[in-house]
Image (cartoon, rainbow, N blue to C red):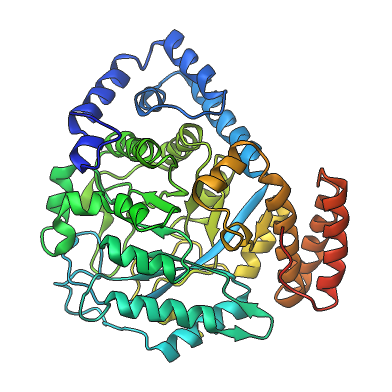
Length: 471
C-alpha cells in the first residue's frame, strides 16, 4: 500500500503506485487539456507530484515539450540564479565486497588494481586538488567493512579538513559511501560532513536484486531506507540519484520523485541534491549490455522535468557527460558540476590521468581552469562557496531561505567572492581577465545596497591577500 510517510521502502516506493502512474501517463500523453493544466500548476514553482510529472514525461506534443524546457530553465534561474557550484570527487578506496553488475569495483573483478589511500596519500591528493582551486569534495569508497570501515572514513575526513596549503583549504566534504547505521550517520555528522549522497541505482526491486546479486548491497530495503536513517542520525542534507540506463527510465523517474516526496512527507525537507548519472563504460563494464540507454534528447527532458518537479533541489551532473551534454543541461536545471575529475584511487597525484583504478570513463577531461573559463564565457558564475553549510543553513533552514528567495542575498555575493579567490590564486591570465570582468559586472546585480558595498570592499581585500569572507 502506497504511503509517502511510511518508513518502509516498499510502501513509500510502492511498485503498484509506480505502475499506476505509468499507466496514467500512457493514457494521457495526448490529452492536451490535462497536460496544459499540469504545466500551469508547474508554473507556480511549488513542484509537481510524481504522477503528473510522469504524464509530462510521456507527452508527445512538441509545443508542450518546448514549454517544459523553457520553464525548467526559468525555474532554475529563479531559485539558483546563474551560479554553478563546483566540486570534485575524491576516491579513497576501490576495495568492495559487493557484486554490482554495472561497477568495475565488484568483488569478482580479479584484474583491476585494488588500492586504498593512506592518510599521507590523502593529504597529497587534497593538495593536488587545492592547487587546482577546489574547495568542495565528495569522497567515494567501495563497501568493505575490513578495508574501508567507518573509522577509516572518519579519519580520512579529519585528514582532509586538516590540510592547509598556501591559500587553499577544503571547506566542505560531502560523503558518498554505502548505506550504514543510524549510529554511523551520527558519527559522520559529528565529523562535519556536508551532504550524504547515495545513489539508488534502480528503484525497481526485482531489477535491483538482480543487479546486486551478492554482498550487503543486495538488501533492497536496507539500501532504499538509508536516507531515513541518515536523517535520524542528524544529517539533514541528503542527495538522491539513480543510474539511468540500468532499468526503464519511466519507472526510475516516477520512483525518484516518490523518494523525494517521501523525504518531504516524513522529515519536512526534500533532497538537498539529485544526481543524474548515466551508465558508462569502465574496465570490464559494457553499458550496452543493459539495453536501457537513453538518448541525449530524452536525458535533457528528464533533467528539465526533475527541475520542474523538485524546484528547490540542487541538481548535479558529473564529468561522466561530455562538454556538449553538460552545456545543454546547465540551461535546463543543473546547478552543480564537477570539474577536472579523476575517478581513480590516487589519480590527482599523478601527472598523467591513470585508468587502472577508474570507476567509470570520464567524458569531460578538461582542467578546472578550462571549465571555469567555459562557464564564465557562457555567463555563469562558477561558485566555490560553502557558506550555508558552515553557517548552519542546512536542511529545512536552507530550504526556507531558498523557497523565499532570501538565499539570493547570501549565495550570489558569496559566489562572487569565492570566484575572486579563485582568480587571484589559481586562474590562468585569460580566465582571470574574463572572470574578473564578470565579477565586477555581477556586483551591480546585488540588490541590497549595503551588501553590495560590503562585497566590493571584500573583493579589494581579497586582492590584497585576505580570504574566506562570507554572508
